[in-house]
Length: 119
Image 1 (cartoon, helix red, strand yellow):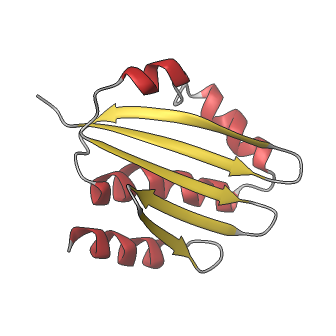
Image 2: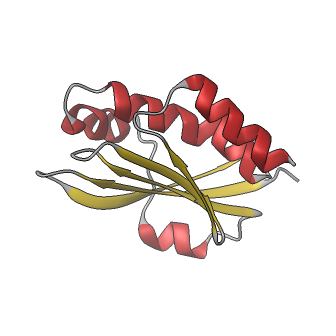
């Protein structure tokens, strides 16, 4: 049986504030989720010219799921990312552990956080 993850993505900006949900298989630890799923979303948000571009891309590719499906999923690991676009604040969390990035996240900083999660 594949390991299941659930990821809540919270996005705030001057124009937008909401959250959406991702679930999937194959990532059974917080480090796996950050390395293989959340990092992609953090970098896509950081590199988008406007937050709407990122949000439309997620919808277009059907990556998100409903809140009800997210809540009903019996996942092995639940994580979240929070992005405040206006103030360039980015964080990844699991349980009561929060990892804040020092501004716009870059691959090396994400990799360092993945290493922290593995220990």
